Length: 314
Image 1 (tube, rainbow, N blue to C red):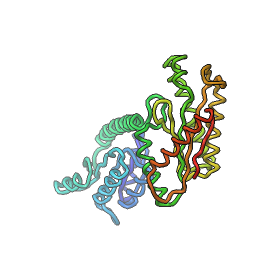
Image 2 (image 1 turned 90 degrees about the vertical axis):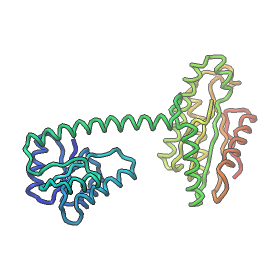
Image 3 (image 1 turned 135 degrees about the vertical axis):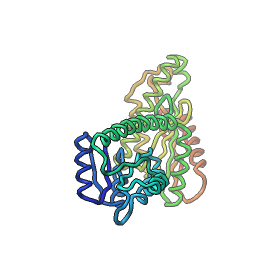
Image 4 (image 1 turned 45 degrees about the vertical axis):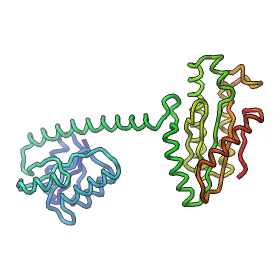
């Protein structure tokens, strides 16, 4: 267990740290509340052992600031146990009101201290499991269950945020709509299970291209999502013309290399997609117009023979 020990008396801190280390815990020291708060923000521990009376910032104020920081970060609650030489009712009330969870006397026996730490270690283990469960729930809420890409709801929320940022900064903004060519015929010919496998493979290919494009600095903070059915969207804030074109070309080429058999997809014989894109230098307006223009460009790509890219005029 990672413990942050906050104690201004060096002799007390050294003795308690030695005991805790002998129990198998990792201990970091802070000599006052301000240092404790800074270290907590830098790397949150599993447990905080907090002295009350300290220079610069006492334990109550440090605890209050830690709880406020946790609330802003939406982090799981971290146990804070106060260390005191004067276990008075007033101190207990103030400790609980500040956000503390328990009291320990500085002179308690080694056996009692070890027992308390075992209990805290169990709580730390449960907190870790809870954090993992919460992460999975968050992923389920933001990810499409079939493809693993971001879902439509997550995309709508984050497109609005990115669009607002683009208007504020005057940065360019691009959207690409992608549709699998003749997908109904694919499902009818190969079955819906094969169709699901096909969509998953396409999604992986799109996501990899977007990741590589971001990594190479051709775009900024681009992401892919499943728009609905066999349709996908790629949102590219801060997009350069070259970045957009490169991303679209790479997606087409990546899917051609997958070479997923599709006998009823015209002369291609493999699964392909059509892409419609729209890029604007942003100053005002609604992001819906970009989706409308990208969708119109997608329609032209379909009408123009499929397996191709069509960009709307800026």
